[in-house]
Image (cartoon, rainbow, N blue to C red; front, side):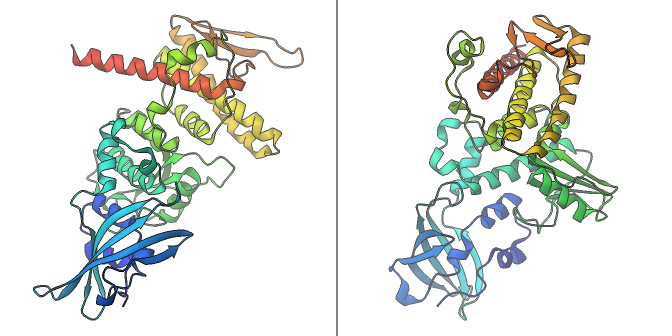
Length: 418
């Protein structure tokens, strides 16, 4: 016998008042698999092989117990699966599924008081990278859970003037409702990609006085960007930087880089000789993660030489990426040359602030072309029009990021010791 109505939508109808994190955890359970489990007494102790979306699951009903005080059956299920990497997480979890005598689904919960995703989230937000197992950490389910948690924290910090509440029927995937709302004054929703954020904002127009869609990564091709009055779309990196003190910046970057841990990146001193051209550079192919990070980096304000270095390194990445894409025939990538407007603002910042160790000049490279702008920081050329650094653009970005992270840590220690 299979219970009828084993879906997250049915669970949410009777549990919408639960805390948002608990709702998100439930949404990420393997619902289609659990819906196929035979729960009759004859199935107890007998593994059931269930295939879903190309992944094999083994589910064992460990016990079936009648709860006389509640008039329901409680089934203890062991769900096991090796997963398939990013899209299918592994399982070795016990769940309690509850149903009526007539076989109607009532509720579902994890058998442990603290679930694996909760442990991951605690280590992630505590920045205890050594407590994160890469095999269980780098999955789509983890990315979705952490992304929702980051958006919630950033939004609550950035929009403190509003009395925001978590929308009770909100979903992590494919939902039209907001994540957070302040009555009909403000709706806040989010999507991972900017194209989807624009689409959500358009569909939500008029449902609140102000509708804001937040996103993590810029969609890397042309799409519809028009918005009705009263709607806005912003990068979560920009909102965090400008309105929430930048306290989630490193966590946002990890999401943008496909949950790449900071410990995966070489230290600045390991990259410095390569960037200075003193030792041969290893192959450094551009990855999607580098482009996502670079696009987000250029949305932050520039307030120091270290920040200038990081943002110019991001510009080098984008320049190299656009050229490689156009060589492959993707001419629409030209629209991303808009990032050079930010380079202009960086040049203006250099001209106004005249930071120590920074030189800026223009020179004619080709008589038929306008002069080329060059910016050199501490004797390392980071000109976005330059050629030397393009082949090692990802290494330059990692080097500049490492220096920036180290300087921020030094500032933080200085504030704490005053």
